[in-house]
Image (cartoon, rainbow, N blue to C red; front, side, top):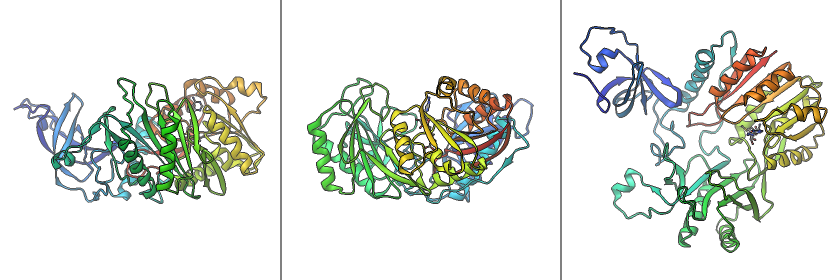
Length: 483
Ligand SMILES: C[S@@+](CC[C@H](N)C(=O)[O-])C[C@H]1O[C@@H](n2cnc3c(N)ncnc32)[C@H](O)[C@@H]1O
C-alpha cells in the first residue's frame, strides 16, 4: 500500500526545526509503505507543523517530496515534557505567538540551537565562539508597540462558529492569521501588550463599529479605516494611539480622539497617519497630530529617547538594553574610535555607545527616525553623534565623501529582516573597518551577508542570540567580525 498526501501517520518528533516545526526521522520505505526493497535507515525527514521534540503525534501528510515530507499534527498522542498550556484564547489561530504552548526555557534552548545550526550548516562557519542566548526578562506584555489591522472580512475561529451566534463579519480589528492576507482575526485581548492597550483596542473597535465607519479593502482600495498602532513607553507614562486611515476626516477623528481620551485618560498623544498607497503598511504618506506632542519618550539604559509614530524602536524595551549592551561589549571601544551605526533608526545604538566612542556617524533612510535621532542626541547632551539621511539600498560612499566623514574603526549594522543590500556590503568592505558588529532579527539573511563579508576579508569571531520575541520563533542575533 502506498501512503499518499492527506493520509494520517504516527510520528515521533526528535528535533526542532526552523519556524517552530518538529522533525521526525523515518525510513521512507516504512513511512510510505513502499514494498520494494530499499534503504530502511531512518533518514527521511518529515517536518511536522504544531509539534515539538518529545511528542508522539498523529499527523496528516501535506507534502511528499523525494528528500522530505511535510505534515501537520492533528492529535498529540504523547505530549513532550516541554509543552505548556497556552494562555491566549486565540492561540492556534492568531499569527502572533505561535510557541505559547512551549515552555519558555525550551523556547530559548531551541532558539540557541537554531542560530548555531544556521551558522554552522547554512553558513558553513566553524571555529567561532557561540555565547549563550540572553532570555527575555518578561515573557508576556513585553511589547511596547502593537500594530492591528482593520478588515471588512472577519476571520471566525472554530469556537466562534460553533457558538452559532451571528457575527458581524464585515468589520474586524485585530491580527492577521498566517498566510491569509485579507481576513483579520477580531482580537479583544492580546497577551503581548498591556491591559490599557487592550482597552484602547476594544474602545476603537466599538467606536467605529457604532459609527458604521467603512473599512479599507485591500481588493477594491476603498474604505476609510486601515490600522491601529499603539505605542506605549515602558519607563514613562507616555502612550500613543495612531490611527491609519486612507484619507482625512477631521470631524470623525476629532470625535474619536475626544471620546478615547474620556474613556482612557492614560492616552498622551493621538495621531492620524493618512496612507493613500495600495501597499498594506501601517505608515502614512503624512501624519496629523490630533492631540498631544505627537511622540512618546522611552528609556534604554541611562538614555532617554523620543519616538515618533513611524520611527523604528526596539519593541521589547527591557531586552533592547541587553541587546545594545551586548553589541557594546562586542565592540570593546576604548574611546578613540570612529563608529558608524548603519540602519540607525532613532539613533538608539549610536547614543547608547557614544560615551565610549570618539565620534559616531549614524545612517538611516526614514526621515522621522533621523529627526528623532537628532533630537535624541540633544536630549541626552551628546555632541559626538551625527546623523545622515542615507538609503542603504544604494551606495553610501558618496555621502561619506561629500561630508568628509572619517573612516570607521567599528561599524554597527542593524538592518531590517531582509538584511543588507550587496551594494552596502561592498561599501562596508571598501571602507574596511577593523570590527563589524552585525545585529539582526533574521539569522538567515545575517548569515548570507556575513558570508559576503568573510569573502571580503573578515573573520567571524563570535555570536550571541538575544531573545527579543518570546512565544514567537523570531530570533535576534549579534555577530562580531574582525578584519
Ligand atoms: C532593525 S531596525 C534597527 C534600528 C536601530 N538600530 C534600533 O536598534 O532601533 C532597521 C532600521 O533600518 C531602517 N532601514 C530600512 N531600510 C533602509 C534603507 N534602505 N536604508 C537605510 N535604512 C533603512 C529602518 O527604518 C529601521 O530604522
